[in-house]
Length: 506
View 1 (tube, rainbow, N blue to C red):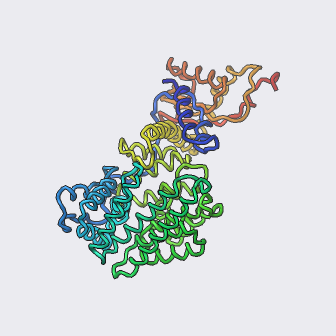
View 2: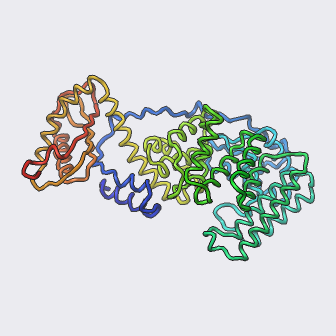
């Protein structure tokens, strides 16, 4: 495949995924690098934590302390550092235990996860994932039927009746009513919901609120209670001050339960009725209040929720640099997570395409462990991976060239290199040429002054002519340039077409 056909294929696929205003599509469309020959001389100098970071955030408890079956224990013991489906398998196992009415064992699992603050590698709370197995009638991406909802609600009510002191059963039931309310409303805009749909939405939300009030009277307290209450607040249109007060109360109860910040960050988005910039200000505020590394981790935990940043036109403008710092700090503290790697790759490649090298390295570590909830379909994952590889390679080369040009010997070499290079450009310029603006060139010079690789950031005919001349010199193994300080050696030139336009054409 030629570069042009590769670029067109990528751009066409991006166009199917994004609106014409998408920053990702603009970013890629603006790139026009001519030729890719060899990679020697690339410096990928970002430090990544790998094996040393692969430490479980806390000792993995033996599920059999709750006297569960070997089959269930296997489903609950997946390793998220190597298996992207480990959390899904955990929730699916919990869902299966609910259908089999293993209420006592479920209470045991929830109580243990709650009291030990047990987490998956990467920092996800097992308690939160456990609830996902309890309040969803069918696994993602299957759409539930009325029969599915009836079966789930009946099963949860059985649990409440059988174990009236179970806070887990009531919170799961309240969560289910929140999902049931959302099902009545649908996914469309507010003006697409019928009066009957709004009536069911309000009734089911009210039932969730009633169940939560019952749960609040029980002696056992649970951090997930506040997450469900925040969803009630969303459905009932509490004002911002009330939502903030609830968030502060929740954070005081369990400061490390980052899901509270995710919910409020989402609620402050303009598409939810929030003011422009409110989500950005909130994420920065709570991260700064926590401070240091822990603040960066919280910032990443907020940004990495797929309902906060989804590569949509109205995504909040969060700092990619701080997101990346938070990701790396999360790996150091909680270990590797295939889900976190998918999310950081998504954010770096699709949402804030400012660090293609970071995205490329994340994709390399993901391998084939792509997450369906993040990417939806495998072709989108593969497309983003290919684009990150192509653009990340360019960024790595540019970083190497920039580093060379900042040294005294690099500046001296650039002055010697530039003169013969400009002479080659002049051979390609014609009186009819109308190229405008500046352009960047990257050349990898080998020992003795040979050409090892060429990159030219311009789509013009003159640039193509220049590339062909340089490529011919490369194949002939001639030495058009002086020997570099060391080989191979990347040289960057930033040039202006106006310098080369013949006087008659000006």
